[in-house]
Length: 193
Image (cartoon, rainbow, N blue to C red; front, side, top):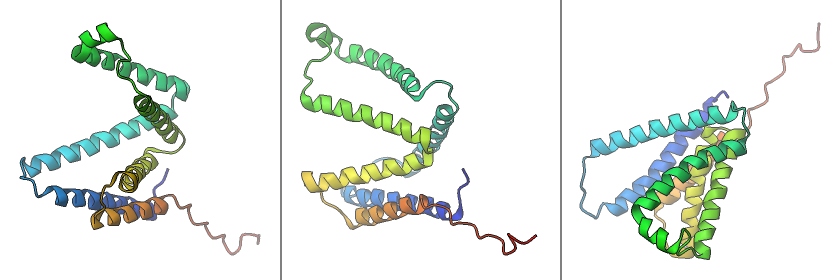
């Protein structure tokens, strides 16, 4: 897929919008005493972005070129999570699992979270399979912003001007990125031989 100039602008706008949201969060947190090295933090964030970008593109490549179905790929990925999750569960709570079983303390809210995360994973796989990793990044950013807005409406969180600015920029970037290409004009002598 070729990324056009308007789409590059939308990606820059997405970056600025996400930076506004994060800056607003850091201004609120700046009242606490700062510890750590900013350069180490910057290097860590840049490394995480590069690794995440590589992983997204690699996942997209593997999903789109796969001979196996999307559902089989999800089962294969889930098996890794199950194996590592079982090791972690037995290491941390082995005695409680042996005494009370696997589903101790599971309430309807826990089952709802499990269902929500599972459905979200399947939706991400579908987006990557049928769209691309860049659009998945936009979808993830929008979901984070919408979750925050739900938190404002129902849980009493407060919005800052930085967050609102970031929200507007992210939404504008999303709509700017997915706009269809402008139709190419036909040559004037298209019907003349």
